Length: 122
Image 1 (tube, rainbow, N blue to C red):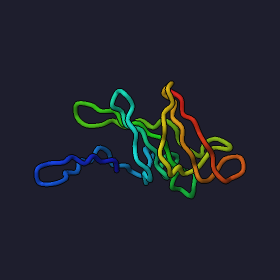
Image 2 (spheres, one colour):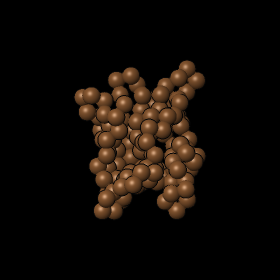
Image 3 (cartoon, one colour):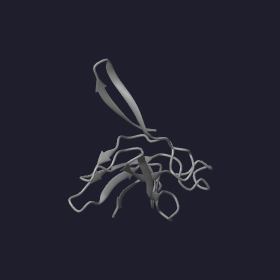
C-alpha cells in the first residue's frame, strides 16, 4: 500500500492512498515514492503487472498516483517482464531528470540476467 503520515496533536495519523491488488496494478512496493511538481506520486512494485510472468506473480510495475477530489487514481506506466531483455522486479526507488523522465534499477533480468538501469519517458 501507499500511505501518508500526518502529525497531529496526539501523534501520527496514517492515511492509505492506494491498496495494491497483486493484479495488473502491482504488488509489494519495496521502495519509497517521489513527487512531481504537479503533486503526482511515482513508485515501483516488485510484483504484479502481467501475472503470466515471474511464476504467476508478475514482474513488477512503475506506477503513478494522481490526486483527485475523492482520493488518488493509479496509472501503470510500465509493466516489467513483457519485453525481451526487460528488467524484472524493481526494488529501488525512482529519480526524475529535468525533462521529467523517470530512472530506476532492477536487480534481475536484462540481457545478462543480472539487472538493468531503465528509463520511463512521459
